[in-house]
Length: 80
Image 1: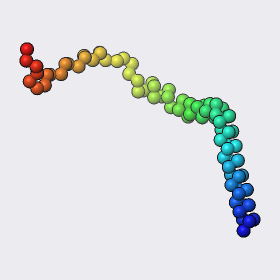
Image 2: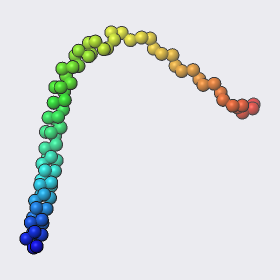
Image 3: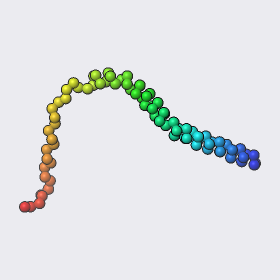
Image 4: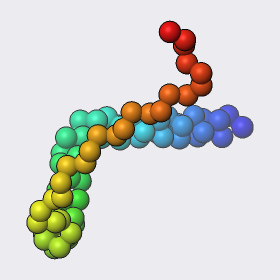
């Protein structure tokens, strides 16, 4: 029974060290990982953007919109 408990304790320690070690590695390498992900996303999206920009954006915009009208007073209001 003592051998089983020792094996469980050692394996628990190994798992804990692995979790702490991988978290430390990710924390120290976070800038490199973020830059890598940004590069991959920009490469995948960059190919589709020139076609979308040329076809979806208008060449000229319309006139400016008029400001919204003031809301009508509700209720009886305050007598003067």
